Length: 113
Length: 115
Image 1 (cartoon, each protein chain N blue to C red):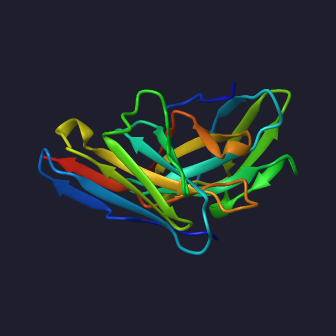
Image 2 (cartoon, rainbow over the protein chains, first blue to last red):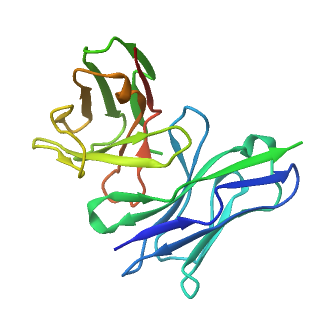
């Protein structure tokens, strides 16, 4: 069975400082992993995806994530937080060819001025 | 990128009435769409998989007679909340995945409030 665990329910950073949102996954085969962002009362927007190509994945808005098989991790990073980054972030694994997505619990990112 | 449009973005209805939510894939065809429910400050919960031209597949614990799903075309799936009650108030989100793509695209969500 596949699962995703986001290690922090809430992360608070100051504007201009680095962001780290942690995600661990469990999968019996090579997974497809995603990070999505959700602003209040909005749908989800894809930040980036990993699908067994390069382990360091670059996404939109300066976000990156590194797939580490040995650590079963897919942490999301950004060198410098912006106020507009404040939102809910979801780490997601795709369940094979069915298209079903398995969501982590979400991490709320707060950015302080 | 692919676009999924959901309508309405919010709706208020009286208890006992039914509400229909539409999910459209604007620039691709989707044989499968997914419907999620999201409670405040919680993650998304998959309700059902909508299959074009056939019956939807519901997740365990989701009442199929309460949440009617119709996927009559390759670009449109609808979710009807029947005989709505206040406990059905929630944020409903749909998604679809274009053929050949691994990622899903989400609608804007629908905030349903039952009074």
